[in-house]
Length: 101
Image 1 (spheres, rainbow, N blue to C red):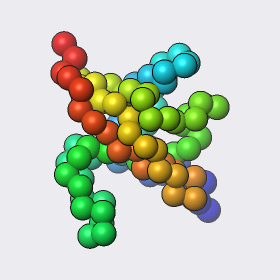
Image 2: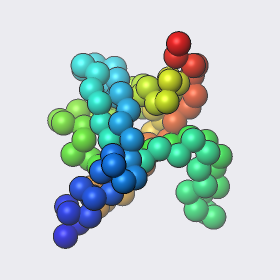
Image 3: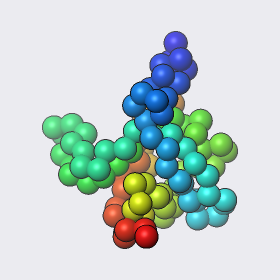
């Protein structure tokens, strides 16, 4: 059931959007994520920083790490500390670097 729910959640026609993920030590690839450019994740974790949620299977054998980068909506972001949720997805906090022209 969780697998089906993840597939529906990360459907680019419904909720997700495609981004380009650039690992430090591997080849860049596209993945579907739910991006929030100014998020409030909970009352215990108040943040106005950008972040995205992604299915762990989207990484295709690459482990998400601090220092990787992502291109989202013509902007470059540094990946901060990825946070697995224990149910097959990751919360990835981001740090804005620059606009991509």
